[in-house]
Length: 59
Ligand SMILES: [Zn+2]
Image 1 (tube, rainbow, N blue to C red):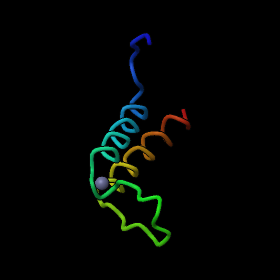
Image 2: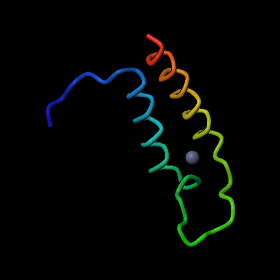
Image 3: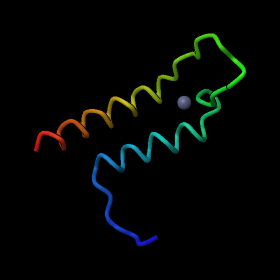
Image 4: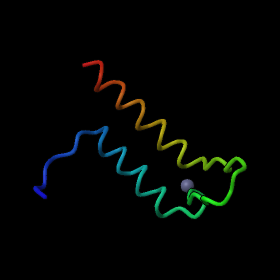
């Protein structure tokens, strides 16, 4: 893997991914069929990523 500079959207996406791996509230239980409770931190990170991504796409 060659190191390269991440775009702000990629950085925000990595932050969201890392959170979802490390946060116990975000761990997906595959045996559960009912709605998973929303994690407010994950939602905030997702919204932050989406905002940046949308601006990058508009350029
Ligand atoms: Zn979480």
